[in-house]
Length: 298
Image (cartoon, rainbow, N blue to C red; front, side):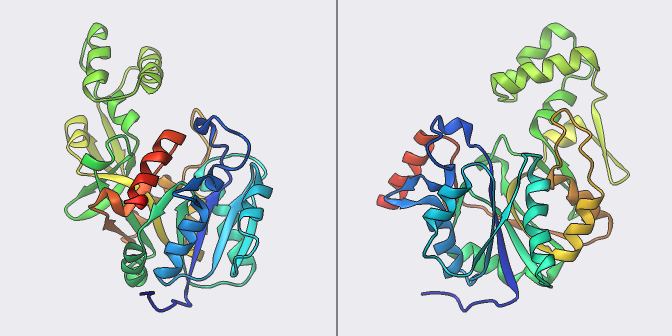
C-alpha cells in the first residue's frame, strides 16, 4: 500500500558519478538491472511508495543513459553536474535547481547506488520538519567503513571519515606498528597506504576538534554511528551551509558531510537511525549488485 503523497517534499538523487568500480562504462551505474529492474527505477518506485512524487536527478557521466532509462517517468527534472567536484557540489547542483524553480521546503538528498525501503522514506518524511537537517545514520556494525557521525550528550557534532579516525589512531605509536594498527581497524589496503603516507609527512595529533569540542582517538573509535548518506534538508538552509564548505582537501572536493558541523552548531541537526541493513541496500560493483538482486528475487 502506498503512503499518501507529501507535496512539501522532493528527492534529489545524485547520479552523476562515473561508477568506476563497476568496470563497465556502457551506461551509468544506476542503469544496471537489479532483479530485472534498473536500479534507478527501483529507487524512484520505492520513494513514490514512501510518499515522494517529485524528483531532481543530478546527472553527469553517461547522462543520456539515465534519461533514456526514465523516459516514461513523470515528475522528474534533471540538473547537470559538468565536473566531478564531490558530493557537496553534486547536491548543490540539484538543490540550486530546486531553488531556481522557486521551491520552498524540505528535500531528501539520496545517492543513486542505494535502494531504500519505502517505509524508511515514509518514516523520514514524517520527521522532516523536526530540524533543518535530518541525518541518516547506521550502526557501525552494518557500515564499518562509513564516516563516523560523532554524537555526544545526545547531540551530533560532525562527521569524521573512518580513514581519518585510523590516521589519528597512529598517534603515540612507533612507525613499525602503524601497519598492524590499520589492519586491526579493518582499513582496506588502498586507504591504508594513503594513511601511512600522510602520517609519515604529518604526524597525527590523536584528536580532532568538532564545533569547538575535542574528541580523542579513543572516543572516535567508540562512535556508534556511521554516515548512511541519506539526508533531509531545508533547501534554503542547506544551500547556506554549502556556501561555508571549502574544497581544501587532498581531492579538492566539496563534501556534503562537512555541513553537519554547520547545522550542529545551530542546534538544527537531528539523527535518524537506520538499524537494518536490508532497509538500505548499497552497491559499488557488479558482484554486490548481484547480491542485492538475490534479496529481491527471494
